[in-house]
Image (cartoon, rainbow, N blue to C red; front, side):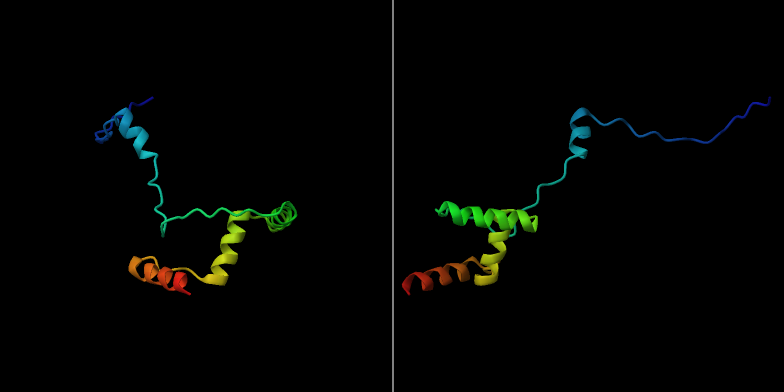
Amino acid sequence: MSERTSRKRVLIPQKPTADQWVAQGQEPEPQPAAPIKRLTLDLPAPLHRAIKMRAVEEGTTILAMLQAILEQEYGTAPVSNSETARGKAKTMTKA
């Protein structure tokens, strides 16, 4: 058998530190498009059950379903201009 000798130079990168290795697998957390506010509803049990059943039938969550309904009814507030949103809130409370 003949021996092969290669003069190719192979550059092997330096091993990352443990912190670098862990950090390379992390994805940045997505920033919410708008500030999130919590809304608590007190519902009669039969109504809650009906909403939950519909969500299961549609393969979604109650949260996603109600968010879609509220966005359809009220639209989405402009995110970039908080003054506009505050102005709308003041107008709504005066009425």
